[in-house]
Amino acid sequence: MQICTSFFRAPGRLLVAMAFFTSCVAWSSNPIIDEAFTADPAALVDGDTVYLYTGHDVAPNNDKFFEMHDWLAYSSRDMKTWQSHGPILKATDFKWAKGDAWASHMIKHRGRYYFFVTVRHNEQKPGFAIGLAVADSPLGPFKDALGHALINNEMTQHTRNDWDDIDPAVFIDSDDQAYLFFGNLVPKMVKLSKDLRSLAGPIEVLDLPRFTEASWLHKHKEWYYLSYACDFPEKICYSRSKSIQGPWQFEGILNEVAGNSETNHQAIIEFKGNSYFIYHNGVLPPVNGQPSGGRFRRSVAIERLYYLPDGRMQPVMMTSAGVQ
Ligand code: CA
Image (cartoon, rainbow, N blue to C red):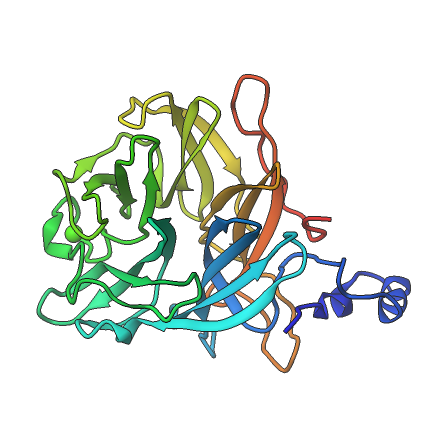
């Protein structure tokens, strides 16, 4: 299915009228998806395709808390038109999990697809945990790779919160060493084994100013960039280093508070020569019989990302036009 209902949200009567007579293929605006509420984007570039994995906000009343049961997948070959592939996994597909399909991260390794996810563990290890599912295709079918959590709440004791081990982000360096970044309030990093299925070292605490959550590690030229949600309501900040071991040099705010959402969560990719900043906001108007967006009903948006000559990332301006 092609997602092109953004026509009807085009500002101004003239644009709307024009949209009816224009092919939907080349048009895209933020938020990029309106068939469902999508949050916590994680993007994977695989050949000539970008796969976008998102959480799935339900929150019928938008006044209590997040309600998220499964993860959705989308794909694009141009960053403008997106194909929906529906839910690819539920939190309760992990037999040890109670629910809460929170932020995820997909990575390709040796021809297979590894989906690291945040879920709420059952009463055996209460609190939020990180699980791992694996598939032979980027769209699944995904199955629990371990039969247990990769990270559970008992494994870190830096805060009293039972959600301090959320938001996995995996990066495999050029020497084939894989790293898992994660955490809420306290940023953490741990080496993974060669098969990504176990930890290969101690969990280290990183020094990242104003850290809240949503780590994302990417490399561009000679720099490693560690971006994350900072403060609350959340902005996106980042630090950079020429070594993945740090020390991390704080570079400030990359993106301000996203409209109508006190959380944010970014994915940063390079695709066909351009860089992109993928995030969420809460501004989706009521469409398709759905209620409007909000703090617990978020939607993924995309902007171009540019680097300055000294390697810093240029602050991202959020737009409704998106990637044109
Ligand atoms: Ca913990």
